[in-house]
Length: 340
Ligand code: ASP
View 1 (cartoon, rainbow, N blue to C red):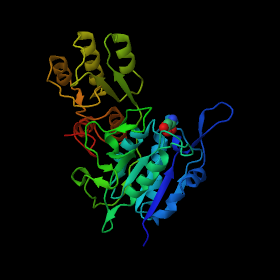
View 2 (view 1 turned 180 degrees about the vertical axis):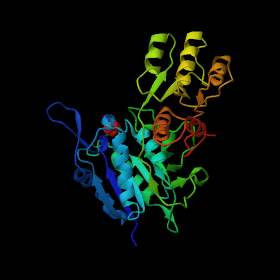
View 3 (view 1 turned 120 degrees about the horizontal axis):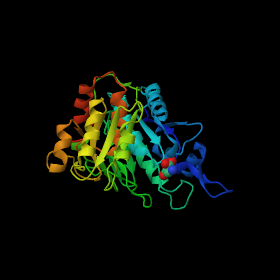
View 4 (view 1 turned 90 degrees about the vertical axis):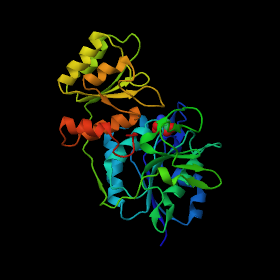
């Protein structure tokens, strides 16, 4: 039987064309993509596609779209061997993170990709990315997928999706995974690093689409004032905040700052400590400037990215879990998003 792959086209630069009126890039239809890549026929795979209507620039994307992607994968799970999600680069890391939590017992590849240059342009990176993503989604050994997880393929690397960050708005290597090894390197051959790829899942595949968006980001900077901190921590309905701290999880020791955080935690707001450094980990207690945070109940995000922290909080808050259980899961890896 032929390997079958479903391509879910959500939008993004890969399929965009220039608006003749103002020169800006706008989404275009999937046939346009197919016309640019006749090589797809050479694969000998059964390729099907579903295109969003309307197509979305991923800067306009919201959790409803994650639910739509997850639902499409669920509806088609048994029919296909693998899934390729064509997606804008701007929020691809958020979507990959969210999907990693929402897809339960995933045992097939879900490969997100896109491009920096539209597929119709001469030096496009879209063609290579699409072709390689399809090849990875189809790769298997004795019928078992080689990469049974949500991942991001860009330029010549395959990453665990919930470890990625868009770190480059200019060059073709748009994504990077600072805290987790590449799942594969793409050259003449695709070299998989099997030791770091998730194990196969035995359970029944399902999706969990309950998400709660009552969260915020509090990014610490020198000179941040009480008004700003309190404004964020007192947002109506706020249930959790990703606190982006310095280095190994450090923040000012000013009494007003610690008191504001402590007061919010006392009201039940979960404060999740994520470092502003792309690489490395939160280690509360290493410096005097984080000891108090640990003492008042700030939860460590270890080496998680902000993108994954946002998705993980939305996911966990959407489940019927008490606060202690949520904090327990925040502290440890659920889908390989942090080292703990
Ligand atoms: N704004 C585009 C998007 O995220 C950028 C891209 O695809 O590279 O949809």
